[in-house]
Length: 171
Image (tube, rainbow, N blue to C red; front, top):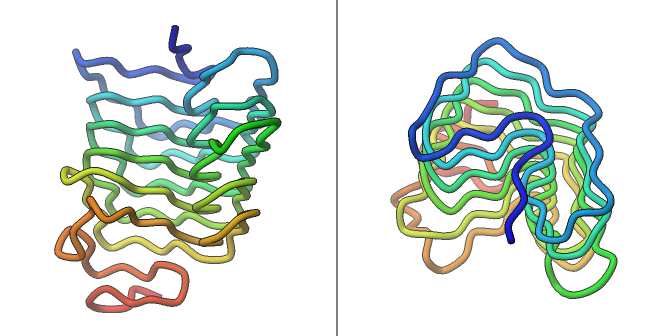
């Protein structure tokens, strides 16, 4: 079955994590690991630093933050890594999100072997607001950001995503 984060897991009951650092959390053996740093289904992550987290197994997403709901706000997500051993996963070296807002965050210097080195976003409930995503790398495509067709451009505002401005450029 699915494995939880090494750093913190916030389930559907929610929770509030603030002013924390998740540094150098590494995972190399569990299949289907999500977010070695932070895995959130609900709740609020505020003013946290997620850096140096890595996963070295197949079928992993979200090297720093894996988010299906809740709110990640004013976080620095940098220097996280997803290495794909086999298959087509390893999406979102910094952040994988399929719901909830990412607000006032900086996502930089992350790496994914597949897509979305900084950010991989899917789902109609995904919101990216006043964020900077730049300086990331990906092996197959979309070095900084992968936005799937399920993410409406209207759900991205006042953000700079790898060379594309959505609204006002916060840089």
